[in-house]
Structures are given as C-alpha cells and as structure tokens.
Image (cartoon, rainbow, N blue to C red; front, side):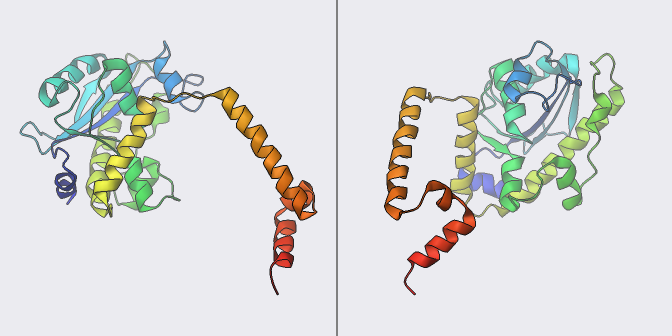
Length: 254
C-alpha cells in the first residue's frame, strides 16, 4: 500500500494533502507569468485552502478553509504537524505552486514532499498530467472548471461553489496518491531524488557564470569546426538529417 511505501523509505506515514486556491484574472494568471512572479505579485490573494490529513488521530476527511482564514489555518496545521510540517509527508499536485506558497508566504519548507505529478510521470511520462485528464483515467470524479472563478476575489466568489471545487481536487489528489505511489518501482531512490530536484527549485544554491559559459560556447564551436573540416564537408552538408545519414552510411564499411 501507499502507507507501506512511506514506511519503506523512512518517511512519516502521517500525511497532509494540500491545495491552495488563489485569485487570478485575464492578465494576472499562471498562463501569463511564471509561478515565482505570480506568487510574488502584489495581486496575490488567497481564495481558499483545501487539505486532508491521513494516518493521524486528527484525520477527519477533506477540509475547506475560506480565503481570509488561510493564514490562521496554516498556523493550526503547524501546531498539529510541526513548525515546518516536519512531522508529516506533504503531498500536492504541482508542488512548484503549492509548496512555493508555503515557503514564500509562511516560511514553511517541509522536508518530506511528494508531488502527484512526479508519480503520474512515472506511470506514463508522455501522457497529460493535468488533473482534469488524470481523473477520468483513474475513474475519479470529474475536475471542476476553475474558469468560473476568474476575476473573482473572495468577496465575489460563490463560496459553496469554491468549496465543492476545492474539495473535489483534494479527494482526487488523495486518491491519486493512494493509487500511484505503490507502483513506484524503486521508491528508496526515486522519491528522495524527486524531493531533491524540487528542492533545487524551491531553494536554489547555484550561480550562473555567463562569461565562462560564453567562453565555453566559443571553444566548443571552434572544436566542432575543426572536426567538420577533417571530414571534407561543410557544416551545412552535415547538419541535415538525411545528409548526415547518407554520409554516415557511406563512411561505414560495406
């Protein structure tokens, strides 16, 4: 089971599935800007929070929190699961959004994180990983339409519609965790590796040396030119797929 996998890799079986809802409009949206820009923008506003706690004495099914109460709810979760949510495994669909919100808005950087998208990519890397496509594939409830909330602040939103939409996502994400985590073939390696990769996004510690990169590009270009000259052909002759295939066939022993 999915709980057995968490035990196997030494992660907490107490689990928090979390999903933030936020304001967006025609110009201010993740389709028009990066996640980092979106979260840092002055327009950022919570319109809701859904979560479900699993394998815990306080587990009581999916819960929805209204937008204005999100900071209060996060503090309550910290009291229950640790200041950095370090006493549980945190699960989200697209952690680059939800976990970055935890980090940037609340200073919470959980040590144990699983992204549903990492699990679905293991299932089939080439398929769509959108929740609206995963839900019917695994016989889950249909995902609601987020477009109904475009341009609506918490005061404008149909609160019941937002609650139903959010809790539907939470139920589906919990189900996907339970379905997909057990199929990971080498969880002791793959789950921590996925967490490490996410960590490089959430808290990057490397710098780019643009001068050195430019120098390397130039040196590689010169070496490539030398190698091409030795073939007796031009770069244009070799660059085409069909031309290269023909040249390679002619160069090989008959």
